[in-house]
Every structure is written in C-alpha cells, then in structure tokens.
Amino acid sequence: MTTSAYDVEPGDAVHPGDPVVVDRYTTGARINHWITATSLVLLAISGLALFHPKLFFLTALFGGGQNTRAIHPWIGVILFFSFLGLFLRFWRANLWEHTDNVWLARLRDVLGAREDRLPEVGKYNAGQKVVFWSMSLLIVVLITSGVLIWDQYFSDYTTVEQNRVAVLVHSLAAVTVICVWIVHVYAAIWVRGTIGAMTRGQVTGGWAWRHHRKWLKELVLGRPKDQKTGATPAE
Amino acid sequence: MFPPLPNPSVQPVPPKFGEQDLISRSASTITPPAQRQTEVAKLIDTSKCIGCKACQVACLEWNDMHEEVGVNVGVYDNPPDLTPASWTVMRFTEWVNPETKDLEWLIRKDGCMHCEDPGCLKACPAPGAIVQYSNGIVDFVHENCIGCGYCVKGCPFNIPRISKVDHKAYKCSLCSDRVAVGQGPACQKACPTQAIVFGTKDEMKKWADIRIADLKSRGFKNAGLYDPPGVSGTHVMYVLHHADQPEIYAGLPKNPRISPIVDLWKGLTRYAGLTAIAAFAAIGVLHHLVKGPNRVSPEDEQRAKQLAGDRVS
Image (cartoon, rainbow over the protein chains, first blue to last red):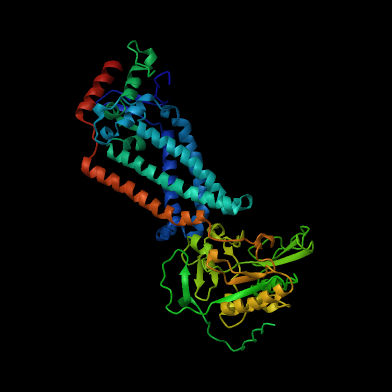
C-alpha cells in the first residue's frame, strides 16, 4: 500500500443543492445488485428448506420439493454470474487499506455511531469491505461445492465421499453467507439514508459527509495527487 | 435345508404392517409404536451362490422394472452397477486365496442392507420419503422423494440410485409389499440353491450358525456372519467364507457406519447453523433497540453543502 486509494467509481457525482445529492450507484450497478439480492434471498429460502425439516414447508413457495431441488442450483448459477458482475464493478474500491485496520479496531465506536472518532472513510468502510470479500470468497466456495452436489448433472463425475465433504462445506458456507447477509442488510437499515443508494442510486451529501467523507472529498476535490494540499499517503 | 416359506393363500389378506408400524420417518418426528414387530431378515449365503442371476430377474419381474439393454464390460457383472431399475446386482470377484493358492470365485448379491441405523433416512431432507418399519424394512416412498441425492451421501454401502427419468431415488424394498402379505422377497423365492433365505432375524442368525459350522468343517476357518454393528446390524445379512476380510467381496465395507461427515452435517451444523443465523438477527434487533437509528444530522448536510458549494460550480 504505497498510495492512498482513490475510491471514486464511474458514475459517482456530486450535485450541489439543498440538500446536496450524490450519485453513488449507476442504473447498471443497481440492476446488477437487485438480481444478486433476489437470487441470494431465493437461494437462502430454498436452501434452508432442504437444510432443516422444520423449514421444509418453504418448498411450497417453489412449487414443491422436486421443483425446489431442481431450481435451487440454477438460481445459484444466476447468482454466481450476477455477483461476478458486482465483483468486477466494486473490487478496486474494496481493496484493503491501512485505515481499514484502524476503523475495525474502533468497532465499538462504529456500533456506537461515533463517526467523529473514526478515520475518514472512502467509498467503502472496512465493514463493507469485509462483507464484499467474504461474499466473494463464500460464493466461490458455494458454487464449487454446489456443482459437486448437483446430482442431476454432475453425479457421474464425483465420488460419494467427495459429495459428503461438498455438502458439509456447502451448508457451512451457506450459513455463513446468510449471517454476512444479515450484517449487510442490518447495516443498511441502521444507517439511515443508505437504502436510497440501492433503490435510486443516490444519497444525500450529509450522508456521504458523515459516513464516507474521504470519498465525498475525492468527488468534490478530485484525485489526491491533483490536490495541492495532498492527502497523506498511508506509507 | 432351510424349510422354504409355504406358498400363501391366494385369498386377499390385510397387510401385516403399515403406517402404524413406522419406527422412523425421514425429516419427521414420530412416536414409534409401543409394540415392535418381529424383525425380519434376508440371509445371503455367498458360499451357496452360483451366480445364476435368477434373483436379478425375479427382482425386475416382481417390481415391474425394465433395465436398458447394456453392453458387456468384460466381466460377468451385468449390469455393471446398481441402477434405478436394477435394485440388486451379482458382483463377481476372482480371488486367489494366498494360503491355498486356490482361485476362488466370490459372488456377492449386492443391494440394500436395510440397516437398523439407516444413513439414507438420516440424510433425507424430505418428510416421509424414507421410512423404517418396526420389522426392520427400510423403504423409499417415491411420492415424497425430491431427488436431491442426499440418501446416496448418507448410505454407507453406496446403494440408492437416482433416476434420470423421474428424478426419484430407488433401491431394494425387501419386497415390502410381498412381506406384508406373508411372502418372502422375490429374489429369495427365485433362488435355486437356497443361497437366499428369508425369515425372522433370529431364525436367520440361527440358520447362519449352522451354515458357518458347516463351512468351518470344510476348512473355511474364517467363515462368519456379516451383520455389521457399526449400523446397529442389518436386515440383509451375508454368510461369508472369509468373514475376516469382507472387502474381498467386491468391496463390501469391513466396518460400515454412517460417515462422520454426514453426522456432522446433519447434527451439529444444522443446530449451530440455525442458532448462528438467529443470533445474528437477534443482535441486529437488540442493537437497533438500544442504539436507535444512525441518522444524518442537519450539521452533516450543512458541511456537505459547504464543501460542495465551495468547490463545485
């Protein structure tokens, strides 16, 4: 990490006014996210239905057990490619920085909404980056183990013992993804003004100032290297 | 010779067991009946089997299954493996006895063992797709099967097969329909050498003792009964001439048990997983109740306005 990351993504823009409005996500990114989100929820419901007998009734939402079994892997394929799109859009702004360690070390202040005690955050804070990278890793684990246990098409290419390991790994990874998803959704609800980024692609300037000040400054002032004042690189 | 089961009356009779005799049902909690039925068992005597495959034919015929015409793969096994239509297959092994240097032709009729502790049933996520009757028969109920293949992962003997046609799991039913009206399984009925006998589990063990004593008297000093304790015993048992090494019979497992991976998946993972999910959700709710929402203040908006107004035209 020799240079301070410049987190502005294509499409990010500031519109002065009252309040200031900041473009955070393009229409393409939002559609991409909606497909991913819908797929993940459907996968969680259909997966949990086959995970615990008490939740088997959820198969009714998909037209019965046979249909649930048949459709779940295909939704997984959609999720994988959809998330791949999100990954390609967002990976750069999610690269880990020194300040992310500071942010994580002050998790108590994060949960206490004491933004004044936290370092200025770029487009994504350390929590969002943890969500991003754990989702990336877990989705790779899930698609890999999922294909192995996709009995309809791949049973001839795997051994029973491989399938046993795969189904255990798949369930553990799925539980973890659901927990990460809960953190992701809760953070979006708790931090008021966030949902607009998902629905309309916009947040207010105050939201950006409070939660992603470095990003807002970059948007307004341009790249750090262009600034005469010069942000201190984390060297 | 074991006295053959008499031919039953042709008069219709009510089934001897049914729903009320279930001792376990997949993905369900049931109260087992107070009175357990006498346990039945099929005993397969590998030392008497001549590999005629009459049992395979009888199985296809009774269960009205039509195996695809296959190809000769160079060995006697035909079809080469169990399929959704072939619930039993003779497995042939040519084995040189290291002590006698004799070539022994080991023939084992493979198929569902009807475990007392069935791994398929434990792994099955569909309520009622796999049931275990109190007489020991483990049966697949196809209208409840969803075709996920979890039973294949649960089975320590690699028995169930998923149909590519209707996506349901198939395996030997121990002819539960025949047993219910007092008949033996079709394979047993067809066996010309009494290599397959059927009766109560106690009878079969006693008969096996006689067979084992006979084999020992003929020099098979390791002859014995295969009724593996790792799955709490089975309702299909083998008499093996070399019971000390069951794996020479086309890979019959020496100490079969439900895989610890399956136990972990169906046990701890399930409870810990749902607990973790519930805990994360509960922590979120609690945090919100205690801390309240994290709102943007008018001050924040003002600062943003200053920043944006100053620098952006």
